Amino acid sequence: MTSIFMVLIWAATGFAHSGDVPIFKFRSVTPSIFAGANPVARDGDLAGVDYLQTIGIRTILSLQGADVDGSVPGVVSNWMHHGERPQFTELERCAVEGRGMSFVNLPIRSRRPWGESDRKSVEDAVVLLAQASPEAPLYLHCQRGIDRTGLIVALYRVREQGWTPKAAYDEWTSVGRGRLARLVTAALDDYYCERYLLPL
Image: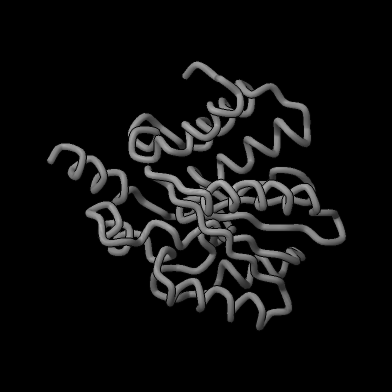
């Protein structure tokens, strides 16, 4: 019961953006890679997608769609995280492609148990980030732009930019990945630590 309560608290954290950018946690990873939360608002507002078009993004990579299932956390994800629902993925795809950008969906489960499809999505996502260029910048997101997005950015930092695993992990936590998020989405830490044997 306690874990269900903690999931509800974590899921209910706010997604308000700040400043002039209509996307929560929007940030530049490199001049060619940007990251943040889902650019489609819960009410279907597409201001985030419009913003990405205006700054020249060519590809939007979504990590969402694997968290909705018949489990209790899956029901919570369906209720709290609109971007996990298939209809929102399709809304995003249509909005992105209708504005001349490419849309790629590589769903990653944010919680245990993980499967081969999750691992493949992670590896494919890192490859896509490595292919981004100033002529073809990419925007990466999950629901909040913190947990799954942070994992992919951390892996990219280590593999492509030569950061130490600890420095990349520290950046990941500094974006807003607190203890509760790490507890709920421990599968992401498991994957990272399997590769880098990082004591957390």
